[in-house]
Image (spheres, rainbow, N blue to C red):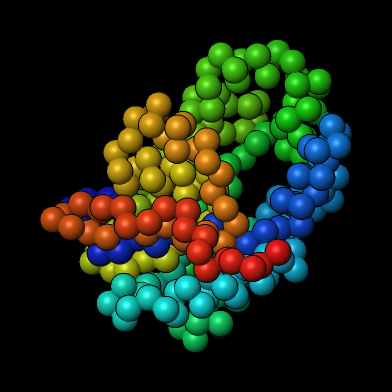
Length: 232
């Protein structure tokens, strides 16, 4: 069992709502070119709602049966992911061997950083046309990454994890693109299949789980948000 299938459980959680998520939604709805986010992407913090979501994620982890609960954690170096993990583990009362891994960072947007969809169309119309032609999986914005780039670094991450922690129950807290492309890897999806999956956004503080059955990870739940009822 080499790579992701060496794990007993893979548990993925997206970070809670960030101030960047809030700013981007408002700017996009207003038709603005720029999101107005002042921090670099790595330093964007959780919003108050995001901190509440992270606590509910902790409740979800604590409610798992003992033999399904994670026994180690890996996390994106970005502040919103690290804080989500810290809040969730504190709420759950779970102490885990936790390591930051830069391969779990969000996808690099390159020259599109800080722009809304409107800003990309207006400021870089030729690049927007290339994106429509090539599709998300293979289009790489100048200075940024395509989904295939993200898959490559995640394959490296899961390979190393399988060597370091075979048979373990691993919690990964990261970003929506990391979760979608991890599903691509774990379930051996095609480009068309993963793009279809991506049509439904991965919600903040949602949980997705895969269990090892017969030497392969099988999906148990994806983008589960039941624990977030009532959080706004």
